[in-house]
Amino acid sequence: MKPVLTFVLTAWVVIGGAFASTALGQKPFISQEGGFSVQLPAAPTVADGDVGPGGRQRQYTVDRGDCAIVVSYQDNPGLANADATSLDNALKVGQNALEKAFQGKVIEQKAVKLNEKYAGREIAVTIPAAKGLCRGRLFLVRGRLYQLLVVGEPEAVQREAGPVFESFTLTK
Image (cartoon, rainbow, N blue to C red; front, side):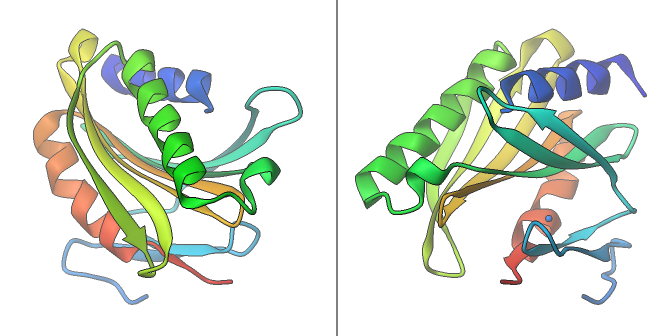
């Protein structure tokens, strides 16, 4: 793995805290335990990690050489019945954590919805140390945080992010 991706994936783990094939060679990936499906260019590797006191995150990663695609989820029971303001604040915390982890700058941000129902945030963060880019979508669904990140060389990130982001859907 290139040093850029090693840095990016290491930073991502530290902050803790994606049906038919497409023209880009995407293949369906379904996480039964995560309750989602997503189009990915290859089978992901799976890793579990700690994200604070008592918290666990499951992370699925596809290394493309010039970028990495990371789809993860973690449960946040305290947000299961949160109001819209609390959800938005929690998403901003996630955005700020990415910015800090990459020692970069948020260059894009907008509110998005998953299934036209669940609060989300789409962001782009510079990664100065690697001359890279991170594009991400964060969603809070019934107390579960879903994170979709594409990190690496800017051109590769732009190429891969759209198909991953647009294919992500809940299965339960």
